[in-house]
Length: 108
Length: 124
Image (cartoon, rainbow over all chains, first blue to last red; front, top):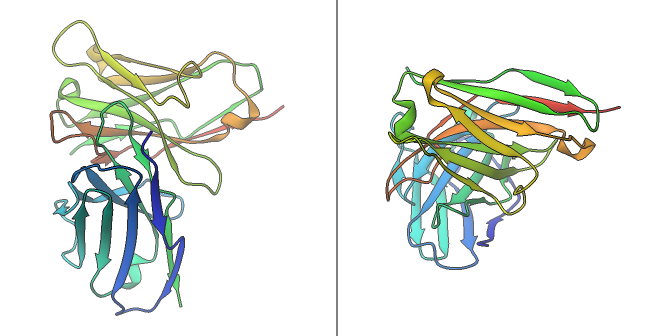
């Protein structure tokens, strides 16, 4: 199984901050990585797929980068609507999908 | 508009069986995978399994090793509906279960549209 490790698990930030969340895979997954945002009581929402492709309708302040085993989600200027939990997910193999443990972005 | 509609909640006792549905609309149901994701109370997301119908009479079903033998995934393409089934529930099955759509093909594997989730509570 491919293990996905996110860091940090919690991040305290202010509106306007540049925020970076890391995701590491236990083996190479090429660029087969997605990022999701989840707010309390809501279903997750796709932000980024194939490591750096922005899903339609997602604000351009969100960006993804990386390949192989190291990936990053960046929010260029944190907005009030962005306080949420973020998850990475690998899809290197259709038979064994897996998520990272999540990063909660909270108000500083 | 794409929609995946699930029941809001199910309450069951340990040992009981449960099947609930995920009905897709607004897109070609057989041209996408439908996946299931578990979220235990206060915890992260876990992939349960997924199903692809396609145009043939057979379906491709894949399970996470953690859920293999614990649940059964099926679908009825005539009514654009996927199902998640337990034959004997345990208290530890208490969680929110989301269905979600995955694009097919070599570039797929991510969840691009989600249902609102079904809260399953298993308690005596």
